[in-house]
Length: 120
Image (tube, rainbow, N blue to C red):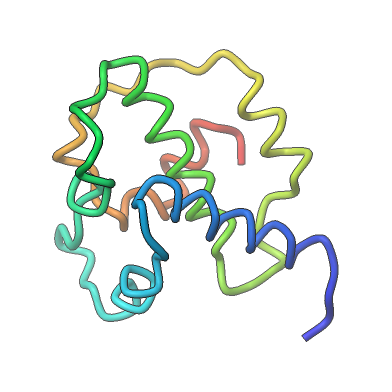
Protein backbone atom coordinates (compact mmCIF):
# COMPACT_ATOMS: atom_id res chain seq x y z
CA UNK A 1 0.00 0.00 0.00
CA UNK A 2 1.30 3.43 -0.93
CA UNK A 3 0.60 6.14 1.62
CA UNK A 4 -0.85 9.24 -0.04
CA UNK A 5 -3.78 11.66 0.17
CA UNK A 6 -6.20 8.86 -0.80
CA UNK A 7 -5.36 7.11 2.49
CA UNK A 8 -6.31 10.27 4.37
CA UNK A 9 -9.57 10.39 2.42
CA UNK A 10 -10.35 6.80 3.40
CA UNK A 11 -9.56 7.53 7.06
CA UNK A 12 -11.82 10.58 6.99
CA UNK A 13 -14.65 8.39 5.67
CA UNK A 14 -14.21 5.96 8.54
CA UNK A 15 -14.19 8.80 11.11
CA UNK A 16 -17.30 10.36 9.53
CA UNK A 17 -19.15 7.05 9.78
CA UNK A 18 -17.94 6.55 13.33
CA UNK A 19 -19.38 9.96 14.22
CA UNK A 20 -22.76 9.15 12.66
CA UNK A 21 -22.90 5.70 14.23
CA UNK A 22 -21.44 6.43 17.64
CA UNK A 23 -19.08 3.46 17.25
CA UNK A 24 -16.50 2.07 14.85
CA UNK A 25 -18.18 1.02 11.57
CA UNK A 26 -16.25 -2.27 11.26
CA UNK A 27 -19.37 -4.48 11.31
CA UNK A 28 -21.21 -2.31 8.78
CA UNK A 29 -18.23 -2.19 6.44
CA UNK A 30 -17.78 -5.96 6.55
CA UNK A 31 -21.50 -6.57 5.98
CA UNK A 32 -21.63 -4.36 2.88
CA UNK A 33 -19.90 -7.00 0.79
CA UNK A 34 -22.47 -9.62 1.73
CA UNK A 35 -25.57 -7.39 1.55
CA UNK A 36 -27.69 -7.75 -1.54
CA UNK A 37 -28.89 -4.73 -3.47
CA UNK A 38 -32.58 -5.46 -2.83
CA UNK A 39 -32.85 -3.09 0.12
CA UNK A 40 -30.14 -4.15 2.50
CA UNK A 41 -29.22 -2.19 5.60
CA UNK A 42 -30.98 1.14 6.03
CA UNK A 43 -29.19 4.32 7.10
CA UNK A 44 -31.60 4.80 10.02
CA UNK A 45 -30.55 1.39 11.39
CA UNK A 46 -26.90 2.36 11.79
CA UNK A 47 -27.28 5.91 13.15
CA UNK A 48 -26.42 6.53 16.79
CA UNK A 49 -29.70 5.95 18.62
CA UNK A 50 -28.70 8.18 21.54
CA UNK A 51 -29.66 11.25 19.53
CA UNK A 52 -33.23 12.44 19.16
CA UNK A 53 -34.96 12.29 15.78
CA UNK A 54 -33.25 14.89 13.58
CA UNK A 55 -35.01 17.87 12.05
CA UNK A 56 -35.34 17.93 8.26
CA UNK A 57 -32.34 20.24 7.90
CA UNK A 58 -30.16 18.06 10.12
CA UNK A 59 -31.40 14.98 8.27
CA UNK A 60 -30.22 16.50 4.99
CA UNK A 61 -26.78 17.07 6.53
CA UNK A 62 -26.65 13.49 7.86
CA UNK A 63 -27.43 12.11 4.40
CA UNK A 64 -24.74 14.30 2.82
CA UNK A 65 -22.13 13.22 5.37
CA UNK A 66 -23.11 9.57 4.88
CA UNK A 67 -22.85 9.83 1.07
CA UNK A 68 -19.47 11.50 1.41
CA UNK A 69 -18.27 8.91 3.92
CA UNK A 70 -19.24 5.97 1.73
CA UNK A 71 -17.74 7.62 -1.35
CA UNK A 72 -14.44 7.83 0.50
CA UNK A 73 -14.53 4.16 1.38
CA UNK A 74 -14.38 2.96 -2.20
CA UNK A 75 -11.94 0.02 -2.32
CA UNK A 76 -10.26 1.53 -5.36
CA UNK A 77 -8.41 4.71 -4.30
CA UNK A 78 -8.68 6.11 -7.82
CA UNK A 79 -12.45 6.41 -7.39
CA UNK A 80 -12.33 8.20 -4.03
CA UNK A 81 -13.11 11.92 -4.12
CA UNK A 82 -10.38 14.31 -3.05
CA UNK A 83 -10.56 16.36 0.12
CA UNK A 84 -10.91 19.45 -2.08
CA UNK A 85 -14.01 17.97 -3.75
CA UNK A 86 -15.46 17.11 -0.36
CA UNK A 87 -14.77 20.59 1.00
CA UNK A 88 -16.52 22.14 -2.00
CA UNK A 89 -19.45 19.77 -1.52
CA UNK A 90 -19.91 20.81 2.12
CA UNK A 91 -19.74 24.51 1.22
CA UNK A 92 -22.21 24.37 -1.67
CA UNK A 93 -25.95 24.87 -1.37
CA UNK A 94 -27.58 21.50 -1.95
CA UNK A 95 -30.96 20.70 -3.38
CA UNK A 96 -33.04 19.04 -0.64
CA UNK A 97 -33.47 15.31 -0.93
CA UNK A 98 -37.01 14.01 -1.10
CA UNK A 99 -36.16 10.59 0.32
CA UNK A 100 -37.25 9.51 3.78
CA UNK A 101 -34.46 8.51 6.17
CA UNK A 102 -36.04 5.12 6.75
CA UNK A 103 -36.03 4.47 2.99
CA UNK A 104 -32.34 5.19 2.35
CA UNK A 105 -30.21 2.06 2.17
CA UNK A 106 -26.46 1.93 2.50
CA UNK A 107 -26.37 0.57 -1.05
CA UNK A 108 -28.08 3.78 -2.24
CA UNK A 109 -25.55 5.89 -0.34
CA UNK A 110 -22.78 4.09 -2.17
CA UNK A 111 -24.44 4.41 -5.58
CA UNK A 112 -23.35 6.86 -8.21
CA UNK A 113 -26.87 8.35 -8.36
CA UNK A 114 -26.73 10.04 -4.96
CA UNK A 115 -23.05 10.91 -5.38
CA UNK A 116 -23.90 12.62 -8.66
CA UNK A 117 -26.28 14.95 -6.75
CA UNK A 118 -23.25 16.14 -4.76
CA UNK A 119 -20.96 16.39 -7.79
CA UNK A 120 -18.59 13.73 -6.39
